[in-house]
Length: 149
Length: 149
Image 1 (cartoon, rainbow over the protein chains, first blue to last red):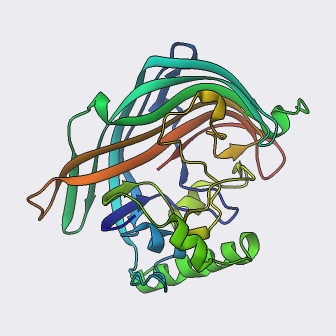
Image 2: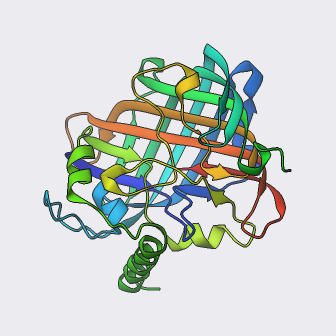
């Protein structure tokens, strides 16, 4: 991401889990059949890695093209995401990636903010026109895809 | 833990992860191929943090086996498409494998205001959730809610 000045993320676990945090059940409200869902969390502790290269290299930057190393700093983010408006429905079976599901492509909006020493960000009000691609669904993968469980 | 020690721990765990999961390293050609992107802020992407590990215990889920390769580095996450293909063509929107549950995934781009900037800052938010049954690293079945930030 060129000209990037902040990169908020929750981290890679030692086993490779990417960007994931465990959360209370109630932060998610979802009705996959109707293509609606919400995700709301407040003051989630993350780090600001400045840019994607530093996020992926643990603050080591990159050599060519040169991206200077920048140490991550603690930050918090809050967000309210809403999925609604059915655009497409499909049952997907993907043998190569071992997953299947009933999915609904939907509209979506987000309002989010970040806070860290010396910098705060507040996104514009929720705007359906900003949605690029959003999905809600019910899926099975791995052992559940193969029916072993 | 002071800041220096925390950063050292992050680097150590990142290096450990790369040795274990990505021994092929980061290639310059791959970086040049994938470096283009938007300007501004991103809400999501990753580096290991002590918090992420502390939240995920012996019941932690396992990552999907595949994923995208930003900067030539495999990450266990498939970003949603940006060109609105049919749902049948999406990659696994879940980040955890051996999973049977509901998912929400979204990619939204927009703008907002940040401390010290008179002009609008652009952002990209790749976020979502997984909620349901999964087989954890311990081989047992669990139920959980996971948010990727």
